[in-house]
Length: 99
Image (cartoon, rainbow, N blue to C red; front, side, top):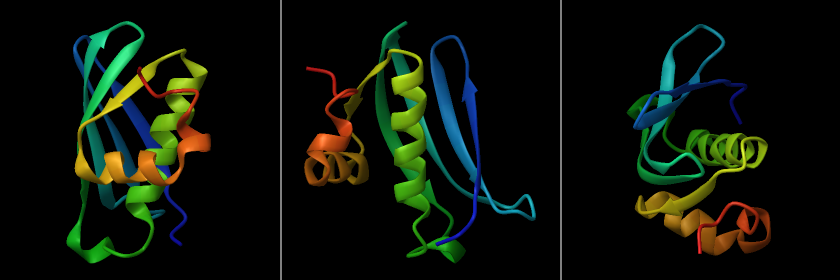
């Protein structure tokens, strides 16, 4: 698994979580929209082709979960990758899943 640097770019109505290599190469990102101050919808997960199969997507989702836990935010996943992750890791995501 790659050792990544994760950054969160949170703006008024949208946000992105980026994963960079130690050489500052963008490996992937998650995009989301803010429904309100405590609810986001994750729309897309994108991993650069050169980094496919190296755990980047999973690290991005975990970073989103950690960010949301720390900021009292719930997640509605619509991105197929994130939906699958949430279905597979129900205990891990229970605290942030929007119901």
